[in-house]
Structures are given as C-alpha cells and as structure tokens.
Image (tube, rainbow, N blue to C red; front, side):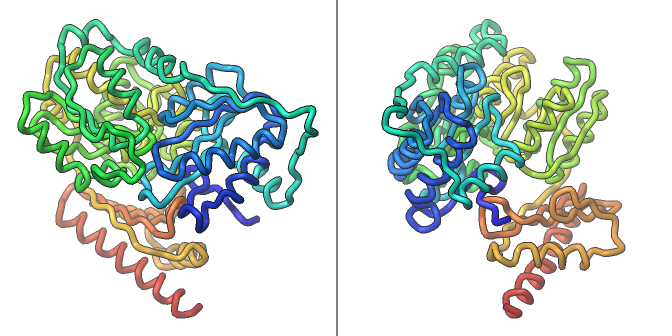
Length: 456
C-alpha cells in the first residue's frame, strides 16, 4: 500500500506536495477514523499554518467531529491536552525542524501519543479509498477555542520538578525559541521556575529569520556567543514545534544531544535504582555505557519518537529519547517534550550545585559523525536492498536501515522517513576512526544511489 505517513506524520513542500486538498482529505480520513468526538488541533508558527489548519478543520467538521482549536502551541502541549481531556485525538500542523517551505500533519491518538503504525495505515486506507464519513447539515458540530492549554502544560511540568530548589538557585538562562511554537510557553515556564532569562528569537515568525529551525550546532552561533559572554549557567534551544531541547553549557559550548540524553538517562537510573531506558539504534554508545554502568538496562528501537514512546509504555521504561534532543519523561507524558527537558536539566543543575560542563564529564566519550545523502524517495527501497547485500557477511543490525558493527565502532545507514535522503551515522572511540567509518558509509550509499539512478 502507498504510504503517506513518514517517521513523524505527513510532510511536504507547501502547495507542491503539501496542499489544501491533501490536508482536507487527510483530516476527513482522520475524523472518519476517530468516528467523531472532540478533536484538538494546533500548529507551529509556519507561514502556511493558518491555511493548512483551516483545511484540516473543514475536513474534521465534515466528518462530524467537534474541533477544539489550541492555536499556536508546542506539539507536547497539544499532546498533554489530549491525554488529560475528553478527546478522540488531535492533529498538529507542523514540520518540526524542516525548512520553512515545508509543513506537515501529525495525528495524535486519544492517549496523546503520536498515532501508531496500525492507526496510520487505517487512516491511509480511508484516505485512498475515499470512504469518508460525511454528516448531514443537522449533525455538524462546532469549532471552539481553548485558551488554557499552555497554562495546563506549564503546570504539569512544574508538578514534575523541584520548583523550590530551582527558585533558590535563581539560575541565569539564555533561551532560543527559534521563532517557533515555544515563543509563549517556554518563557512563561522559565519565569515560573524563577529563572533570570535572556530571550533570543522569541518573536513568532514562520520564515525563521533568526536561524533554521533545526537546533544543530551550526544554527546556534548566537546562542553560544550570548551564553559565553554572560553569567548564564545554561543555554536552551528549541526546534520549530518545541518537542526538542538542545543545550549549551556555561562556557558557550554546544552539547550534542546524545550527551544530554546519556546524562539524564544515567541520573534517572541512579534515582530509581535501575530501570529500562529506550532509545533508537542511531543513539551513541555513550548512552548504553552510561546506563549499564549505573545499573540500568538499554533497549534499542527503530528511529522515531512514536516508536520509542510506545516501547517505553509497553515495557514500563523509566526514561527514553533520541539523540537529537527529543527526551521522553513517562511521569509526564509519552512523547518528546522540549519544555519538560529544559526544566529537568535546570533542576539537575540546581540540585547538584554543579556546572553542566562538569556533569557532562560523567558521560563516556565517543566520537560520532552524521551525514545526509540525497536520494529520491522512489528508489529508497532498492537502495536499502543493495545495502544489505553490500554488508553481507558482516555483523549487522537491521532494526532500522543497516547498522554495521565493528570491534571499534559502527556505521548506520538508514532512509529518512521525512525527507528524500539517506542518513549516515558513524561512531568510534577514535575521532579518526569515526571519520573513516562515516566516509565508508557515504561512499557505499552514494554508489548505490548513483547506480539505481542511472539504471532508471
């Protein structure tokens, strides 16, 4: 069956592959799948948000749903609202970290979790077969606004951290909202935590004038500089829909997401005297080493926060997340949550009395590299088959793509679920060896793509 949904919803370039027709019919399919009821809808700050949200509202209403409009909110804010309220599910209009010409539609189930694969496939079946539920004029329901979702979200986070200890510490923090959905929620959260906060890119603007919305090192030069030139103990950067947080230490040094993942995982396992941590196969070995040395266990999944979250719930895991800054705290909710991650790191600094750079010394050192190679979506499956043949005879893990395990490191090559490209991850204790492995992965995937492209 043709797939619409990728790793995190349905995404595309606005008015090319992501159109109002797609948004309307996909939302009709989602409303049909839900069978009516209350459906929450929200969006990030992208310039196309109102257009696509209006189309989605129309689709939901035509299928007999009541629509509760949360306006511009972080994805985890909508997910918490659905989890705690009387909802059949929700829709989030966002393309997360993708460039501004992209937008997307994520579907949330009644538990506030991103829809599982079975649900997505059922929605796709309704979409492609056009078996939409269409109610008569007398059965149309209402579109209402919810203005309390952000406050409810902040209150939930505050209930899961030691607010008084943070207030006593009075931390100075620099916050980069990326001109995205965090512009309202995260400044309010830090204010209620008693932080002295310097704000960057706090004006909502879907063209992302401050920097591209993906919180990677090359996009955070201003944040790093401001932290280094101030007495701030921490810098925090969100992505476009604020389900991720990436950090900068007190010296202005960028903290890779795998290190913050490993640090919080280690501390969580220590506090709970053990427990399971769930993370994708793309995560650094520093996470596994930190967790197991602290008495915990690790479980690997395919890439994608919805997969990680569902395995966490099924196994009773104490913590989980991805190496890109997407951390999941089950005591709060089963999804990536940038606001919760920010609060937990601030709490860790306040309770420990240490600087972030010192705390990160607890994390084992590995060197990793990440590359992107363009690949047309229509040949991804062929290229993936070629990868399996290329690495035949070597120790591999095919949980997601192909991960090749060597005595001194590993390579992971996997197709992106949201963009027309392959991602290459490589890691080793040696920086030089990590580069060798990354170059090897890039060479192999490039040759496979070129051969399939020429063959077509």
